[in-house]
Image (cartoon, rainbow, N blue to C red; front, side, top):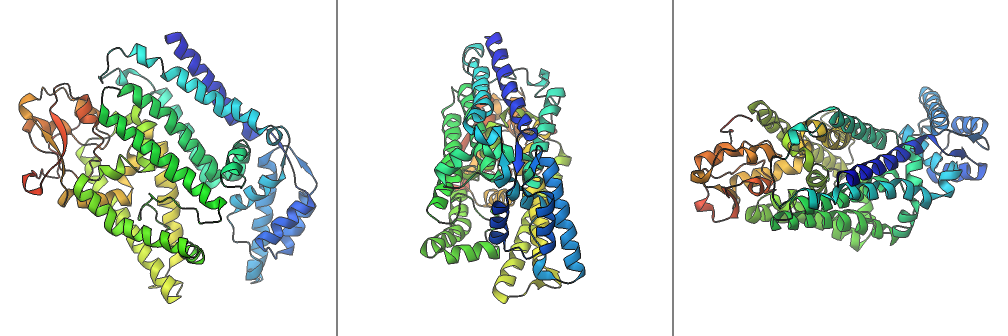
Length: 517
């Protein structure tokens, strides 16, 4: 079985290497007709920019996306600088340079990758999926009897911040940086998922479709791993199935199908303030312009946030969303499961968590207040502060850096719930309701606790569960997402997830009762 797993790992690494190499392959040739269509669709009035592109790029062959992208971006910056100096604001191109470069490269691509999309999908995604499954499935035999143990996680370089863990960390961070800030460098990756995108939405794949498809693929493969690992625990099986279903259907398939029918792209499970741009003017205008369906989405988004979310938290705790519905939580519980023990359980981390996550919540609410005021008043600023600047800062620092680069990229170093613990404004909102007005709690039986520490080790939210268990004290913490793994790994059945009446709920102090292991 070990040799079979090694073969699977080798196949996966070959697929991954081929996937990475696509960045450096292919060729690009932008025709004059293609460029004119871009100019017309973007309503570009800069004769300086169009002149530079026609002289340097149009009808010329390029073998590197980096080379052609550099020319496009430099031309964009130079022409914008001249127009701003001359106060020709109607000729300034306000698109983000690398995003604009991506749009040109997407239509300019030629050569082996664009002409053999299915083949390269099989050589990258296909090999990656097959290799991963070949590595994972033999665990059914090698794991022995069902059950979770402290199974060498601190002796594996991939899960103890060893060299493999740091390699995964660097790879994930680089991937997210490219995805968010340099999409023109990964245009070849989008070509291989074009057929899937065109069949769903009728449009070529964007970098966000690529991400969505990759997200779903990773969750599917790692969900199989979860089924094997937790095969004796019905709660974990159902929870894994739920987050997988909501990600595939609600976050991926339905939004893409809506686009095919010329409706707004919308994830019906994504609640504000996690969906921080829901009240941005461009989104509100898009929903209103979409008629009855758009108004339904607008009403649904408000009702979901103000009524459905708190009511569900009252009855079931924040776990109903964070561990059963949320896509961020779904990735954390599947891809991030091997790293859950790396969460910092120190008092210092707990204090930082409280300040950061509630600070982000306040920031998101203030930004939304500014946004709505600007939308209804027509003013571009509030108290001398430009609303657009606040939105840009939030989108960059929280929406991109925190939620993406740090939130997922840091799995192998700081655990799988970095974003959920320290940055998610919706988690903060859910946590406040759970802490003070929820029927959910984790009950403990202190007389049965043998202080093995499995529960604290595997708590992804940094809670020292053992300290509560030793005192027989219910766990009522705003950060707890009710994943139930602490209960799954307990050898004595000390911990139990329950929904009960408020009057029988023991309110544990929010301050941690113990130190990290």
